[in-house]
Length: 324
Image (cartoon, rainbow, N blue to C red; front, side, top):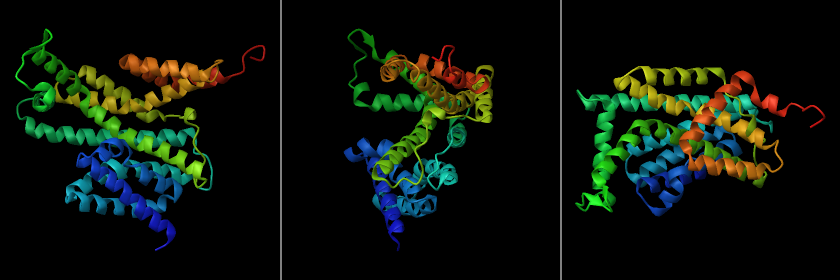
């Protein structure tokens, strides 16, 4: 076995072990496996080459099977870790030889991942529809979430109120809000785990001097038109269609909005680069976004959509009169 193949096997085994640790609820799994189990796969693809990714994936699947004793867990590994990293590797392949991936390549990769996440969400929700019977998918999801919260220590104890707060009513409101966007949020998580791993992996490989490609300029992210149209169509269907179809469309829109959000963030970073203290400006923006996430999401989606049609970044970066 060659050295790159050995490294690929080791990377896959490490990623599989991290995910298996998460499945088992260990501290290591909660700290690292929850979000970073795809990191070794990303480093294998970006540091050794996409041709070694299958070796790492097989190694990871075998590791998950051995550590959990379940072939189903290995199948989950293939879906949540291997599949999104394979998408990234597919678009990184075009940039081998040290070239920097273009903003368009980044946009296509994210768009493909977002659509893949949507397909997973739709498949999962249609599967739930079989269990919902005469009820709706959202009602079934609320029921299951309510059972989980009721079984948790924070929701147990038999007290109806605490500090004047009606715990049952509060739990019902939490369930209502979470259930409406939970499938879409899960789709975001599916994509973000791979994206975070790819960014961190590229950073580490670059520092070690073994990166196969130049680090992309993330603020040059350029989304193609078709995922934006899909997002617009899903959002329109969500507000005009009722029942399960509207619920599925709404969560598809939540998943697809990742594309305009990232394009909106690219615009924000471009604007920050034009002010006197860009890091301070970005810190203020991200703190505000964390404080008001719903408002930030709407703003970023809007800016991302407008950017595609009006080229905001080109206008912002254009030389100003007087040489400013």
